Amino acid sequence: MFTGIIEASARVEQLVQENTNLHITLSCPFTQELKIDQSLAHNGVCLTVVHIHNNDYTVTAIKETLDKTNLRFLETGSAVNIERCMPAHGRFDGHIVQGHVDQTGICTAVKDMNGSWVYTFEYDAEKGNITVEKGSICINGVSLTVVDSTAAGFSVCIIPYTFEHTNFKHLKAGDTVNLEFDIVGKYISRLMANRV
Image (tube, rainbow, N blue to C red; front, side, top):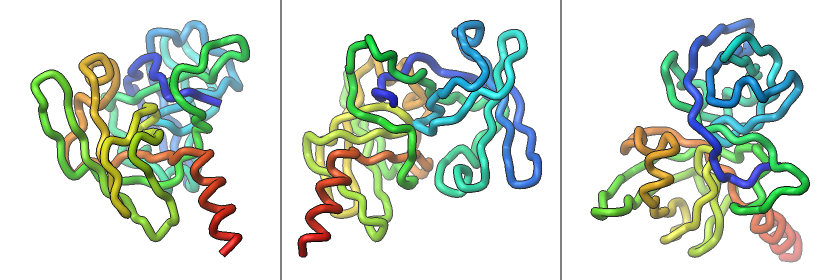
């Protein structure tokens, strides 16, 4: 389980396609602290460390993951938001993030508010996911609060710290992002749909 509080930005060092799998080698500030079989969220996608060499580590994304996330668009040099799973004795600073991306969305606008930034996103509402104002959303692994919510879109506001310490500083209109909708909201939505 994750909280959506990003620890660092990792750099993609190498991409190796093997059949339908993509082996992604990255470097990050705490590679030396990682271990084989450890789970890390990459832009909100839970992946397992399968190899460590010096300051690099490797994870593997299978076809299912590539089909449903923006990891298929990675290039050498891409910045990836990363977070280790939450320790049992840690504080819960964000919201419940499973690392299981529900779908991708498209950034439709970025507005500089002279001290903060408003990002607007659209997604395919046919998949049954929803947002609510002041509810939680996970975008590329970052736990954020929804500012405005529509049937197929929403906006969030980014503070300078989040802008500087995540790949939001590289995000522009037209870019694809990973979305994990709030698990509590998903369960309530499913229960209500079953009652109708």
